[in-house]
Image 1 (tube, helix red, strand yellow):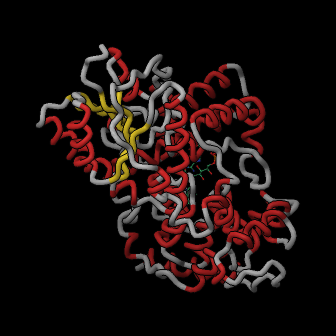
Image 2: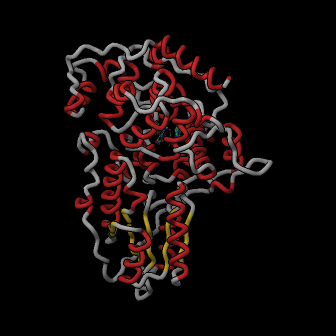
Amino acid sequence: MNGAPPALMWFRRDLRLADNPALAAAAQGGRPIVCLFVLDAETEAMGAAARWRLGQGLAALDAQLQTSGQRLILRRGDALAVLRAIIAETGASALHWGRLYTPAEMARDRRVKAALRGEGMAVKSHAGTLLAEPWQVQTGAGGPYRVYTPFWRAIAARGVAPPLGAPRALPTPPIFPQSDSLAAWRLDAGVARGGAVLARHASVGEHAAADRLAEFLRDGLARYDEARDFPALDGTSGLSAHLAFGEIGVRQAWHAVLRALHEGAAGAEPFLRQLVWREFAAHLMYHFPDLDRRAWRPGWDAFPWRGDNDDAEAWRRGETGEPLVDAAMRELYATGHMHNRVRMVVASYLTKHLLTDWRVGLAWFADCLVDWDGASNAMGWQWVAGCGPDATPYFRIFNPATQAAKFDPDGKYRRWWLEPGQPGAEAFHAAAPRQWRTEAAAPRPRPVVGLAEGRARALTALAGFRRG
Ligand SMILES: Cc1cc2nc3c(=O)[nH]c(=O)nc-3n(C[C@H](O)[C@H](O)[C@H](O)COP(=O)(O)OP(=O)(O)OC[C@H]3O[C@@H](n4cnc5c(N)ncnc54)[C@H](O)[C@@H]3O)c2cc1C
């Protein structure tokens, strides 16, 4: 087979060898494989922290490939032009990739597929990013699910295909095509606080993802349901960035936890439900491609949101004077992560207490999160803002003080990020841009709005909007 024309494997957000159907298909038959990543406009559009995290993931994948004599070829430019050039250089006759579901990615992939098939290439896209393909899950009446709970039931009922192992061999081409240098791509350039700040909190690569899942199954799953809402506890899996970059397949996580469920592990079903929230977001994005731009609920784009404003800037800097909100915004800036419970609290505070457009918050999260996922981020923001798919009413407003009392009862999380001398607060002050002029010893800012006043203002605006 060594003289056979190579197969091209185009890695995207599936930076793993195991449970990677596209890679398995490329490896079938034992022909040489050229492993490729293309930094194109769609990929360059990622926020700063996610671009940095992508660079870490690419380095880890290349290191992993090199242990079997393979390597990851990096090229920058229009995907179709890059693929054509690699095909010409290597004589590849087949191309495989794992499907992605955002409108820009799908448009690119359609264009690439049509052009290269027209030029005689065998081009095949594969499942593997999700538990089910979006067009496979439909309501009884036909069409997409718009509510989470029936969607969860549908996924649970249809079952999930078992994960694949890693290919046994990844034969190399006689000559590797030339590759860009990852360092020269400067994927960390947009991170004002420097990639090293984020690196302290990052877990990267397929091996790390597998270790993390194993650790979570051993130590975390049993108490997941009771611990997962407490930001001061290490109560969740921490798998989101691994899942976002495909360093672990969602089917791998699903089946590992399903086994635990069958063995009676507490926490297993709540965890599977969270994986299905990720799935729900991806399916929604597929069926409603404007999810990150337009209100999902008809009419809600007319809501008189405030555009970007000084209060929103205070929110970004963790200076609203509302302790739980500020602690969470500091966590986001200093680590690239934010606990789910406080993601909901800060999103509610921005959109309800500060009446600021959810897209202002969505953009900041997209720039700061290392686990950024376009669909989950858009669904999360719309859900909290009240214009997304949610069974609870649009006028639900999280009270940060009540949330703090309930989910940070001893104040540990807030102290960690806010109290001078505490490691979190110190890390934040070291990371914050100079122009923010944050000072560790400065007194806490006065609230930009009183909680009761902000709530009343939001309810008036929401009621007025519904009446109008
Ligand atoms: C406003 C807002 C924005 C968000 N933006 C993102 C984002 O950009 N990327 C992202 O991965 N998650 C996002 N989430 C969802 C959630 O906050 C994170 O997935 C979670 O905090 C990740 O931590 P974990 O891996 O320890 O989660 P765990 O509790 O261990 O959950 C396991 C996995 O389930 C998925 N999951 C859990 N909760 C959700 C949820 N509410 N929506 C979608 N998937 C979920 C994630 O893939 C997660 O890794 C957002 C939530 C909100 C409210």
